[in-house]
Length: 442
Image (tube, rainbow, N blue to C red; front, side):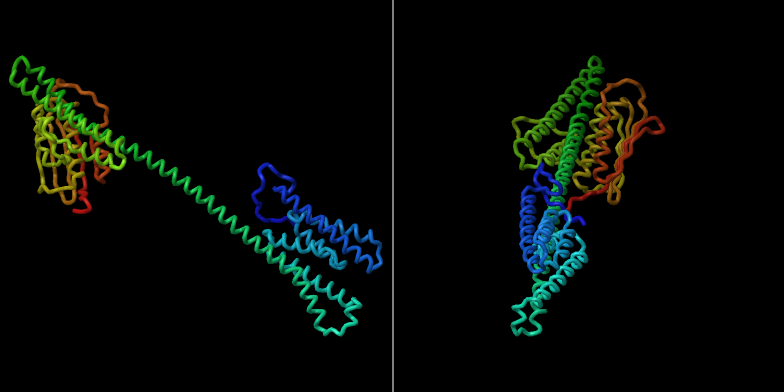
């Protein structure tokens, strides 16, 4: 029977038969030589008592003692050899080490108990017989219980200690293996957590890049688009209406200054993040980038700027007036009772209208537009749609297709719904329904 214990960690690069450590080879070899010497010495005594030739007893006994060298591989065979040597009163060391080795492996307990019982009973019988034949003990007046008691004590002493020690070593080995497996499991979990943390960090970086792109697009693109529209109008009316041309030029200058101011503000936040890691730059970026007003006065470099809040729905009229000033016919209608929403909700609704009007300027120059704002229970809805353009004139502005994507990302991030697409009349429609997400402290 092969030992079924778990393999112990061995020396790297060493392998000899079933040994994985050099010290195990030396230990088993030393134990086998000691067992062979013991069996040889006991064989001399046994030969003297029985009258058998010494070599006939010593040589087989020594060879039997050498079987201890295979105790790690076949501990059951070692114990069976020890039991076979019991009648000759040899193999005490063979039995002790063999029982310990078998008990320390993963062998079934019934097998360990059976072999231990066989060894113990055999030891009791052999000791009792030797005591009965001993002339010195016969001449003494010993009680009847003395011989059985001594025989049982010898049998127990030859079996119980090695079995208990082997079972203790097996339990300790199991505990160490369990702790090692748990440590490996924790290492795997930590590696998995680190992997997931890296994935979350990468996802957060991607979200931050997309958010910055949305803010840049919303803050700058609308004003630049209006600047291009006004520039086209300025080119058309310069010769016919100098007063209107001067007005358009002033509007272009104001919008350009506002766009530059907002761009510098955002870039300043990005630089501040690198200089001060303790501040939450992404939230500052969202807060400051969302603070673009549709109608902000021309910045005065000598006057300190007051802190700005994000755009609100109350500024939609000013936003519509900007588009009207650019020559677009825009109809604004409001349904329901206006009320205060969370700043993020109002900012998102405002940006949807702003981007939709910007797209009308880009792709449907000369078309009229309609803006509807509906205050409903627990939500706000916005609708921007335009009629088909009446002509092909007007400024043609480049488009990357990111405006609609940014609007949808903003609305869905708040748990709302977003729909966009062409209308049956040949125009285009943008619709968003945003649930009211009030701050926790409201």
